[in-house]
Length: 239
Length: 289
Image 1: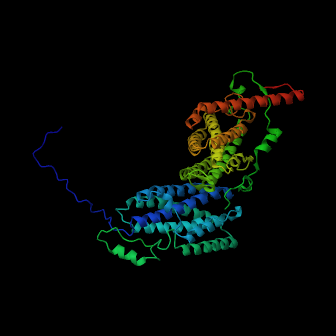
Image 2 (image 1 turned 180 degrees about the vertical axis):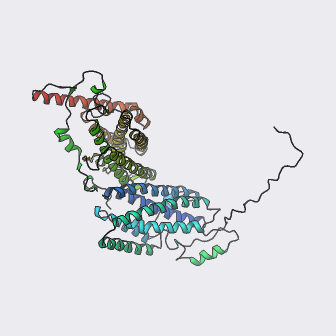
Image 3 (image 1 turned 90 degrees about the vertical axis):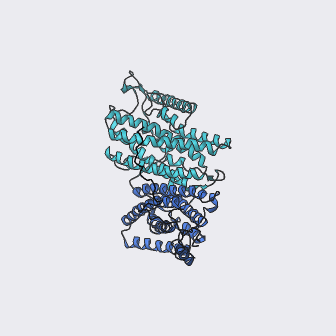
């Protein structure tokens, strides 16, 4: 051990937050609302990985077949992340909150998974990559940007991992679609199917229902709780 | 989308030609002649080695078979993730974690298709050059998920362990580092899949011995199908060796490996007897090696 010196030790006193750490305490969602949204996320991710898994055998295009297998696991992993998060949000019976946001969301998944015939690859991909995944990206982004950066850090961490997958998968899916759509009839088919599914999704209000991205439902409550910044995290959800 | 998807409806592009086990077994062109080993030399063995006259075509055919098998394994894992709701394992449900494992397997199998498609190209094979045997997906069509685990994960993925071990050895002997490297990686995944099947089979049937017995019986049927003609076994006369060590890692007990080995031996003897009868009927002497 070195000998003690006579000069005083340098101070170790530092503020709890460094100057570059700008995280805020307030957030828009309380524990219950976060759990509700996470339950909707898990349900949606489950339906998505089941659909992708089921479709693998139904598409004749070899490259699409392989991408569906890869993406199937991505969404299964997302569902697993949410399954693990639910008990941390005081929901021990995770299946209780593993539900669709509403009846329209359930109807959306039924309509999205309807195409089965081998000549319907465009419809299968349109439902996932032009409707559901863009909606998921929107809902996740809204959640990440509006929840408490300190109290809800575990959800933000999961969302960041998930968003990385979602963006990559969306790009894969969109490029597969662009390579498959080459005739006026295929353009019409893609657009018609997207329009049909989008209408149901609008009715659902997004993957967590009205307020998935802040609009619709309880928007006044949203802004009120954001403004009550003094540190309270007991804001209302925006349902 | 239907809950269950029949093997006849598997979607393929026009390059692929499908066949099934019944057609293959009924095709007399696939019968191998009885050989009388002259010595203990490598040539006396039926193993796939680079010095064999037909080694190149045999390896290309085997690699193409691996690729189509991987496509069906991908499809089968995807269907099991889809076909059964999450639950406690009874009444047409499977545990949520088993669904996750099946999705993970789908990703692994997708990579295996990518790997074997690139290796096939590297070996000078075109997609669809060889017929596709749809036996693997047939085993993934049962309405009991436990039978799928027994037939696909334990029997057929178990066979994949044997085949990949053989191909890895072939790559080593042929001085093909790409082949050896890729087979080694795929072998690691297959051991994981077989172990997954072993573990889930035990868990899901822990309180249902009848269901477990039925699943293991189905596994024996599938194993026997692939013992046909002694194709796989411990004998030098079998082209594919039983990879005992990797099977052990994958959760097979010593007894289970012995049963498969015995089944392989019986199948080999059965084939030899059949060939001998046919040769006698035709007035031929056994063909020297």
